[in-house]
Length: 422
Image 1 (tube, helix red, strand yellow):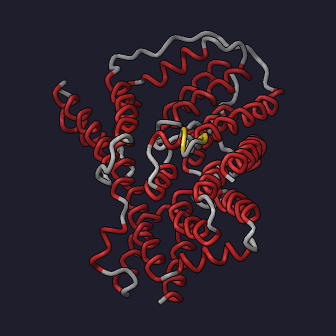
Image 2 (cartoon, helix red, strand yellow):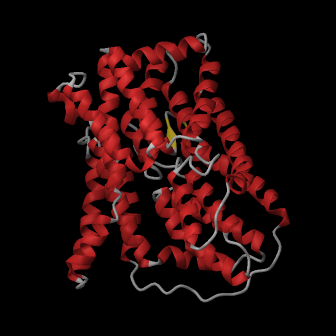
């Protein structure tokens, strides 16, 4: 049964790499095969799916769709740009701004919010928007690991390790992942500023974006506040966070209906939720659950522990930099979903603080996705937006910014997580 499970999983992962447009279909079909052949018992299928994660992602995506429509992020970007003296500083400011948003909003949504602003500025300045859009994309990926709601990988970690919103800031008397990411962001921003040293020119003033509806922004803030408050509730239902996000999204939809926007607008907003990602995750939850059920995860954890010869630092280093390398070519959502139970098993075998390895995994997988244009969905989204505007981005153009940026962020995070949690 273990051999069959490993074979099916290997085929699944190869197909996920070769056929990115059909990842959700592949994951669901693979999950179905795991069930049919008996690796996953029928009565445990729904239990393997982390519904709190699924509902959190769906609700957050819905609220973000309303937030984008309100144009509030574009106004905030305009206000920041009024304070920037040069194009070089404008690109750095936009990257920092996208990072701030991305700590609380999905990475892809952040790129969709900020990249059009970056392209508008570039057009007005008469320069190529390629550099600024790449900077926005890689900064959004970096900050996605900072909070529980910043990225699907953080939500996955929160669900697996039972971490709440505040745990990303302070956990067990030590600074959490938020501060690690901020340290990495500082190092990466310094490198970005240096890489852009040849970028010249001043900023021409432009009109501010008009915002007529501030309610979606208030919904987003309320979601964050309620998630924080929920973290103080002892023995709360497992899907509490997911229900909060979905309930606030429903409030936003009902308000739009009450204001006369109609069912067509409501349906369009619902369709903005990335069903592809949700189905991909559901399928992967079942597949990974099947691997755990068959004992494969336990064996892989033992293999990593042996590869590190029982040395915690070597194992930690292996997890971080293996994650960087793999995430450069593999979407980090399926990778993290697969590796979380493995890392938990390694921590158990070595009898070490599991958060050391969990945070190392998140540091390597989320920040490491910035290395290449295909390493993260936000990168693919940014390049897609540029292509629509007639700009083809080569791997070399992308990696001129992404490699030094990523190595600075990951190295800083790698050292800091070890110092804080070893």
